[in-house]
Every structure is written in structure tokens, then in C-alpha cells.
Image (cartoon, rainbow, N blue to C red):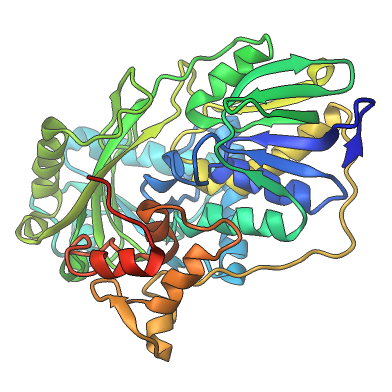
Length: 456
């Protein structure tokens, strides 16, 4: 870190936004001889769009060939698939089956296979109806064909940004939560960002990974070109007893607007149905709606009828940073020493590590000199997935019996490099409160362990 003429610390690079993309960028920058800071508007990282997605590691088979999204999803898939097991992020290769439900959709499967090949994915295979039901015998009647995508994975979406952020901190980065940027002053050598709390953060270079607020930060730098139109996706999570109904992820034939409603297993042992796709004006509209849930149940009844007999564990909604453009909005501005990673939608989890590489390359174009560190510190998170060995299997007192979370895991979550500050953060670090009782049996004990109270 350098010091300017006024004696103020100046970071070489500041990342704005503590979602999965911002955390991935901060991690990669921290692996270089740079002073790095990440500013997150909220009290915790990964608590916005990143926590409420379909948790699928996409091959990118259905992206638009030649787009930035297609290139970065394909690259990010390889990077995250390799990185996840080394740090304890749970990941499973379950494969996916794209199912057509009428003749028109069936006719589109061949073109989708060709699109996959154009994107560099050559293992997609169009199959007939008999093969569809052989793979997924519990599907509802009426399927007309399908396409196998054997390399699709499911992944833990909560631990991914946490692992990136812990990695960044272990390698010298500073993470500042509750630091919403409200103003920017771009000087000849330094950009001064003012936060809502009145702090002034000085940076030589800035990366915009602000997600739903990315267009606001872009305009603060005097730029235009895209506007965020939040797209709400509602999902239903079914009880773990539903898991045997499904072998892998079941996908619909995508449209130009959305990938559609899917049924997928989760690494936590549940089955998920969703998402919806509804454009909203409110960037805080993460509540579920009666119409949205009813629509999902109607689609789920057709796709996997037996799922409707299973208990619902929870429902949730997330907002994607959709724009008026069909592709990611990535740009670099040398005169401002500024890189924008805007309009990163639902594929941002998969492409996060590739977007970090992209940001580093664009920063170099803007004049940042970044030399890789000779020695990198390595971290590990506690695996949360059912495919991995978890702490309760090694002994220890269980406090959340639905999810088999131990007292030690709760204590560790509250003492992490970025500690949990509320029950939502505790859930994402341990799975506590995420089970079928939703905290009915364990909440009192968790309050005692953490010292937190439940808001009225």
C-alpha cells in the first residue's frame, strides 16, 4: 500500500461489491504484489444475489456462441471445477437432462446440440423419449425427447464466495463490509470513493463488481451504456426425502429470456424447483409471491408429479442483475483506471473465476502492473455438502439436528475470517437453520451459543 501526499493510505486496487464475482476478483488480485481492498455495502459478503441462485456449475453449452458470457462461463467452469475440491467447496457431477415437452421443443434439440458444439462442448447428446424415461423414470408423462449434458455439476453457492474472500484475506487483502459507495472523485492518479458511513477510500484502480448496483457505480464514474433491471427468480426447496425422485438436473428447453424452470438436486441433499423470471423495479424485492409459487408448483406437477407429495422445506427469491443487453457488460477505461464487470446474471457463479482473470487483464490494459506473489497462502472451508465428510461424522455435539450441524461449526462460523454477524450468515457458513424445522427446535440454543437475539 502506498501513501499519498496527505498521508492517506492508497490501495493499488479496490473491488466494489462482495458477491461471488467481487470475491473472486479480490482473491486473484491478492495473489499478486498489490494492496487490495474489497468494499461491500452490506454487513456480510455473498448475502445478495450470490446466496439465492440455482447453484449449478454450468458447462456453458447453451450460451450464445461468440458472446463474452459463453467464453467466460466455459473458462470459469474449468477453473471452479478444479478449485472447489482443493478448498472444501462441495461439488457433484450429476449431469443434466434437457427435456422437450412438445414437438416444437423436440425440434429445437438438434439446434441446441449444435450450439453446444459451437461453444466448445462436444458431449451433448440428443436422445429419444425412451432414453429420457430410462434416465429419469419419475418424470411426468408427455416428454417428447431430450438432450443429455453429462458434465453439468451442482455446487455449494454459499461457500464459494466465502472461500474466495477468505483466500483474499489470507493473502493480504482487506475486506470492508458496511461500506456502500455513494460518491467517486477521479483524480489524475487516485480515485477517492466516499462510503455511506463517511469513510473515504483511496484507490489507484477500481473494479466495479457491484451487481444490482453496478449501473449506479458506472454512472458515478461519468459513464453510461447499461441499466440494471432486476429480474426476480423464486424457488422452492423440497425436503431431503424427495432426493431419490431425481438422478440429475432436469432442464427445460431455454428461451431468449430465461433458462426456464428446472428441477435439480442440491449438494445439501434437497430438491429444488425454479426459478421464475419476473422483471421488477425494486432492487430489494426478494420476497416470494403467491403467483410465483403457484406457477412453480404447476410446472413442477408436470415435470416431476411425485414431487408434489413431498414436504416443502423453504421458499426463497433472488434478484439477477439483468440489463437491456443480452450479454455481460464488461469494459475498461484507461483514463479512469476503472474496469466494469456489469450485467452479470445467473451464470456469474460459474464464470466468477474467469471474470477475475478478465478483470486482471483489463486492469493491465489500464496500466496496472501486477506481479504474481512468489508464495501464496492456502485456505480451506468446512465442506457443507452431503457428498463430503462433515464434522458430525467425526463426533461433536449436534445443535441443529435437521442439518446435523455441530456446536463446533457454529463457533467456527462466528470466528471465521469474515465472521457471521446474523443468523442468515450462520446458515450460509454451517447449514444451521436451513432444515425442515427452520429453527423451531434449535433457535433458542443457537441464540445462547452466539449471544444473538431474534428480532421481533
